[in-house]
Amino acid sequence: MLRQEIPTLSLLSPLSPFSESSNSSTDELIRVPSQRAMALQHQDPSFVSDGSQSDTSDISVTTVSTTQSIESVKRLEQALGTTIPYWDSSLDFEMDDPVNTILFTARYFGNGFGFITNGPFANLPGRPILRNIGSDGTLISKQAIASVLSRTRHAEITEPSTAGTVQYSLEGHHNGPHVWVDGTLASLASAAYDPIFFCHHAFIDYIWEQFRSRIPNAESDYPPTNVAGHEPFSFMDFGEFPYAPRVRTSEGFSGRYARLRSYQPAPSCPRCAGSPDLVCNTDRGICVSRAAPPQMRMQAPAARSQAGAAAASGFTAQVVSAPDAVEADTPQRAQNAVAQTGPLATGPKKEIPYQNSFIINGKSDINQWVFMPVKVVYMHSPGVSPGRVFVESDGINYSGRYKDYAKIDPFQPVSSSFTYIGIKRPSNESNVEALITAYDTCGRVCKAKCLVLGSRPPVYESCAV
Image 1 (cartoon, rainbow, N blue to C red):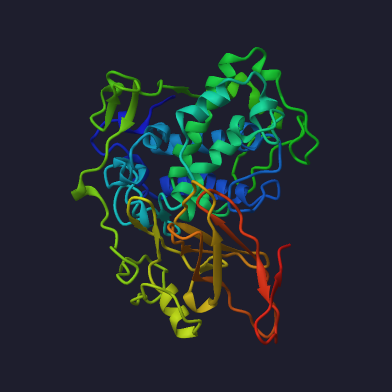
Image 2 (image 1 turned 90 degrees about the vertical axis):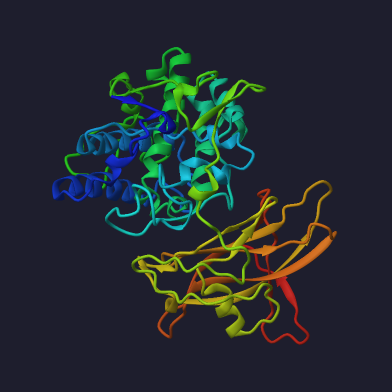
């Protein structure tokens, strides 16, 4: 099986095999052994549910989950009658503004903002696919790939890396596009429901194969670990994957798995594989994705007060007009601020939309959410102007995630702003437990302080755990 980079495929519906799911047998092959199985594997305790796709094991991408995904993807490829293309996100990273890449148009992945309404993935069975490209995270750079390939042992590119820095971590670089695409792909429980998951992991596997070809004894270079389920002779857990073979984790390094697929080399100058959607940057000698023509891009709202009206099956939140600035801590203002298709994350070049799914325990229902005000006070560091601070809640005793942001004045040494964060609505029968985090676009985490109940005037104390 030869896997190719996406823009190098035929322009005649290059990803159309993904949408061929109307046949019942094909639909069963796609949903059960691939997307559902991979989603269940991502909920396994061996993964850390921190929203960043991070993992406590030494070898999440390069052994256990890669070998599992190879078997899942192999069956998906058999069902589709074609191979899964890989998404070389470094081609988009090098653009002036990766959000404008032609990949997130109907020709390839479909729209990158909100629920997917065009392209080959728009009508896939199962849950709606949500994206918020470019709001956070990063794509994989050429420098990141070179850093990984500069190492000579698996222990240096897996987690925790013996190299002592994320610079060489294949797992660390793998996390970035999950967060950059956001939405469905950013959650451990749902990532595999967006078919981009398979294209992204195919590229991670491509980088790994390049690494393997450069080091001696790649098959036996299994990093030492005592993490439960990841020891060399442990059997992989394929969950509900039907007909799954009994495979030991160390077999993930076996050449027999590597021989199941081969890769067309990444596009290079001057031809860039002959793709009309890639261009050679002659100054740097690298291929870069073309920007989508304006008529092919999804039109984003121009301001917070112009909430979009896109909705998807199962999305029950009422779309209302939201104020341009959140100033008063009133329930109605909070409701207006969040009951829209999503606030707009303001970047250095333009505003782009951000949408929450409002999913609680598998069901999208805004009535199951309550919203509380969060005040962000930001002290600027010299030479750093992030523009916004993200605030995120992740359910501990429920399954749900909400994310918003506070605007930061880049021209003030100290600035403050309000936003609202959603959590599950408490009931008389049970309390709600959620992890709430805040961080700027440079990844620096904010210190949390909570209001002391009953204090007059208001007193705030550290409440970080």
